Image (tube, rainbow, N blue to C red; front, side):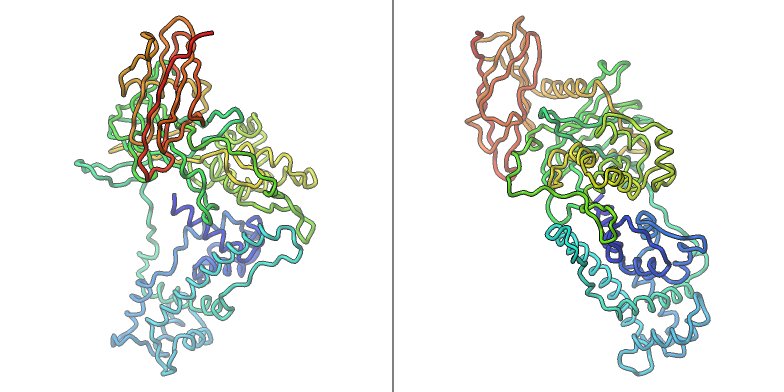
Length: 586
């Protein structure tokens, strides 16, 4: 995921070095060339013609990202290998005549003027020879400069917008790369493409590498491990409860399983650490029964590997429920904002009088959260999880067809650009009133400063040995009840019961894990009891109750989770010392 986040930031940086918004379209081959150069690519004419055909009128940001996925950066080793084949006496130099012959007669042919331009850049000591190692360094240095400048502009642009929103005098900072460098990049691009194509066998040119969905993990077996993943999000509700989707895992055959869950970092949080990355996460694995009530707990993520919470074990062929969980110790309601924090204005009018978003990255982050399978597109099912969360309603197939006619889609799925445009329309139709847009963002966990404070995105990874797992998101009405059942079982199965002083039929169970402590009260009497809980003797501990001293009322013949405890600072020792007593009934 970190690779995907970094890739998207680089795409956005390159795009916004030319355009004010990622909603703008590339409208010419020249613009495409410049954008690719800013992304560290050196597009030759053949490359540009592949993506900008006579029928092409525009390309959007998603198209640009797809092109960058396909077009890799220039490789120094490959270039050097090609030049060495032309260096007949192996002295590290190529004469002007040799270079001219190679570049004007092979591969993507250049004119003599273009060859002379390249030679003048690379022939540093003017001796009529090209030091091709120096030429490669010049080429790759220019590529790196373009990329770095684009990232710097993106960061400066974001800071300036935050500081000076709405100013008509706003203009993006200038690039630190000169036009001469850009020209050098363009000229050397064609030379590089010509050299590569003229020295590479045609069979190699047509070969395409593919990414395998299997991984290799430490195991005594030689079977491959196969991988499935799914994203999700914990949402902090108004009443303090926490909700999320549940997931169905299908395992085709008995297999060893390595399962993880961790908070998910979003692309636009690179400039400062995200508050939710310290939130504890867990995953309960339940074997599906004939009814959901008959499901049984198989295991849960007790161990931790860096930021990932891990469960390892064997699963038989069948269907399982994966139930995400967080204790509420770290994800909880924050105090109200201070008057000095001014809410962000969502919408502004451009110099042309058009409405636009001041902070498009908030909606882009929402897209990243609801793109559950991480394929860069929203299916109708994924979009409906978002609709249910923000409006309580679903989008039917007819409405989806209308979306397809008006917004950017690919394979009947909504692109990132289409999603942003769809939500911008909410404000545009009401002459810039952002009320509906605020409803969406607040439902997704953002505050009025566009900080994600009431949500924690997460990532689930499933690795199976020798078989491909299948994982699908679910919204189960019985989800909270099933999770509570799993949580209670995880506590009672790991520890013995201790009767509270003076009570033979009221018990406390305390699960002491390496990273979390959880307690449960079992009331086996025929009347409700009130248990007083005192954590004041604990050290470096925070309770999911938010208080050191509190009381819990437990109905007759009922089990109830009392509290969860986490260390405030994981780097320091923590001591849990809790005293539970029965309060006299009134």
